Amino acid sequence: MNSAYRKNFIKSYKKQLMTVALSWMGCFVLFLFAYILVLAPQNKTKNAVEQKLAKAKQGHQSAIKATQEETRNESKREIEQLKDKLDNYIIGFEDAAGLTFDISRIASDAKISTFSIRNKQSRVSNIGDCEHIGENQFDISFTASFEQFTTFLNALERHKPVVFVDEFTMSRSAQDKSGTGNRVSMSVAVFVRK
Image 1 (spheres, rainbow, N blue to C red):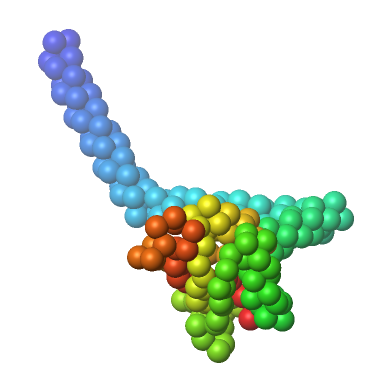
Image 2: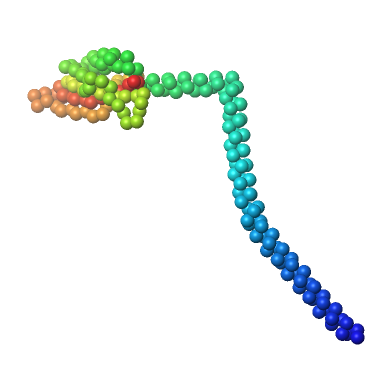
């Protein structure tokens, strides 16, 4: 009896063990399905909310920093430095008329003869998508030696605001074999604040 009892006990035990294992397996599959269906999207939402919170904290820190006097003063200094740099390249609209006199003075200092300068257009032309900056173009013609030309060109490049040379042509006169009477035509441009 002992052996029959043991066989029944083992069968019963195996059956119960199998039932428990299948129950646990079913619960595991159910919990896995619930996790995928419910908790995984919540984790994604949680991560997105944490990222938004981090950005909000960063914005808050920037706002606190911006309210500090030292930061405002530093920003003002930086803006002034940028304005000074901008003045190296852009001339004010009211100062644009005086630019022709500056260029004429540079030509006179370079001892250039038969100098003439004229505006290409009667008004400042637009540049692409720029709302506050335009371009003023000039045609310059003169007679000079190569050395006088390079002196004049160098002075134009150093002028404040910068005068951009778009193109130039230089031709030697057939009558002048010495090279002192080269005919030069230049197209230059400057940026003008509207």
